[in-house]
Length: 203
Ligand SMILES: Cc1cc2nc3c(=O)[nH]c(=O)nc-3n(C[C@H](O)[C@H](O)[C@H](O)COP(=O)(O)O)c2cc1C
Image (tube, rainbow, N blue to C red; front, side):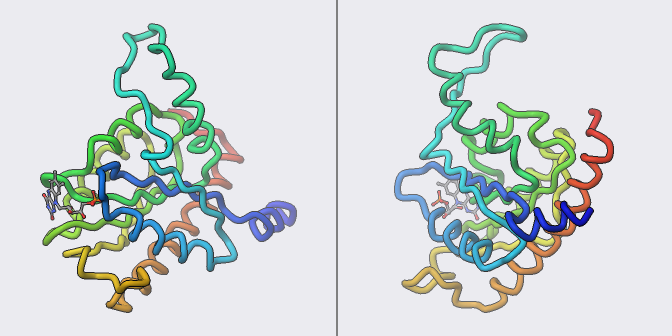
């Protein structure tokens, strides 16, 4: 246990930040950078940014038991081991038509065991909704993958008007909400990491 505590203190919980929007001219980097700032300021977590623009995934699935299409394995190799290594996830998602973007669903669907028994927090943004409906739909999807979604979220309503020119939220409540969400994520990440070590997750 002492070794494990030292490990957490030294390296931190590994948090994969998955950015759901790949749209040209997307607002996502403003939100993701704000979150990465919070993660960087913590002593208990290290972040791995998984930006689906930088590491796109194939969009054609093979038949059951069939071969991947040419090039697919290489694309997956840039993402899958990082999801596998993560102790926890934060999904940064906008809302598109009352749900979350298709590239995010694609990234979720390419994986399965990588989500098992791990916590997922959310930072959402959008128009009036602030992405809340996207988050509620993600909870349903991630439950199917045996992930544990965190209750408290951060949502930016009318996102383009929520940040100053330096990418700082105008409302300090956002920073407080971010801290609460990450504190809850850390609790679950440690508890579930301990549990998975004690008894490997069996789906
Ligand atoms: C296809 C599309 C559908 C959208 N649907 C919604 C919606 O249902 N609710 C909402 O609040 N905002 C909606 N928006 C606004 C986006 O959430 C908002 O522009 C957000 O900044 C988009 O994220 P992105 O710029 O990182 O792609 C939609 C935007 C797009 C492009």
